[in-house]
Image 1 (cartoon, rainbow, N blue to C red):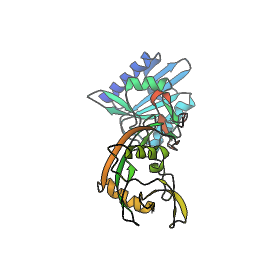
Image 2: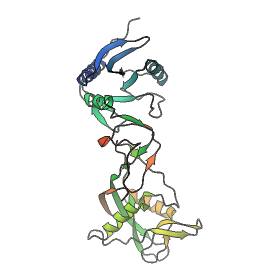
Image 3: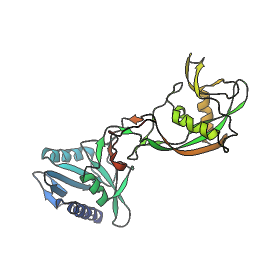
Image 4: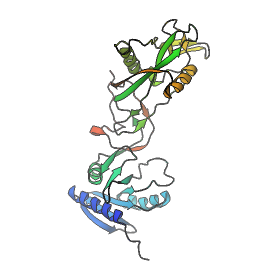
Length: 299
């Protein structure tokens, strides 16, 4: 049975892979046949063996894993470049180096690491083949982050004084640009608004000319009758009454939609806390600080 003719996109990507492999010192061959497999590009260098597969048309996860198993059996690393998301692949896997090609112009493509990074094909292969793309089971926030605090009004339930509290309008990112959203709980001290470095930034802003009109009470543990325990909280600058997390959450929701916002500040800061989540991913970070060995320097 004759194989389906290759599309111009497939031919273009294959040619770019071939050229990149040769530029990097690999022996590379197109349409190389093994025992029961055929690779779009097969590349070898010393003991290293790679098979590159370009998948423009849809292919099931089951079929992809079956083909990948043949490469693993023969001591070959199979690397897949899909144009469309693969069905039923819920998370990235260490046994399946699978990335996506994104069309930039008529026959120009780049490689996307699930939206975290986009590299020209030649650059991607240079990083991948030289070990600068690695699978990590965790995503760890890098120490240096850019954050924005948004201050909004909060009336004290007890003395009726108008206070100003804030929320963190920013996400934390890893060195490979993966988004890390730490889990937070009501009536706990794990909310990012209570991080010491965030509290310090808020207090520093309130002390400036721009923020001196804000009334921010001390952020500290206070006893709550609701839960019969103390937890880190916002409180009234005047009478020191606790602002319960439930009411803060309601006020924050309104502020997010623009009601009661009075000021904001953006700064770069260094995280003290180690924030990590079990997010399996192919990691390509800045300065080779992979998520599973990123060193933390508490300040």
